[in-house]
Image (cartoon, rainbow, N blue to C red; front, side):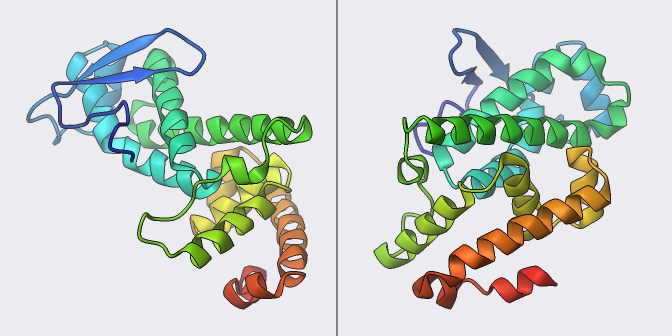
Length: 225
């Protein structure tokens, strides 16, 4: 996460903002609460316990941020998406019917957020407001220029996929989820996931093979397994 990100996990409070909104949420991290179960945490969130909000961020934000960054290829976009996702979680906690499945609920909210962001990104690309290069800031600070460029070009190819195909591909190949897990979190049948994955893999493999330097780095054959 960026050093100047709005989220400060170890501070007394965490300030979170929702894009295009003036809504701010103060998150107070609770002490000695890490041993509570997900079900207990969900009940505490529904009751608007201040310590629960901070603990939920500490427990689940790393998962959301990692998935978002690998799917979007952008650290800053991942930060923004995580903040939106957790605002939704805090506001929807009372509607959670199975509190013990809080982790799955958080992940589902993240997937829905990713779907929306990928659709917005596709629309912006169509309107020529932003190019794929402007949307991607991938790689660690220590990555060399050549590797960063290759990774940027890979994410530019991902931008050419539909939102659904890209997310299915990212969850299966970048997150190493099973087809069954992808189907569950995306609320799709396994057969639909397989078709979407095959479509994404075929198109992406073709694009990569057309660029020899990318083909030398990305082994598209393993995506067929």
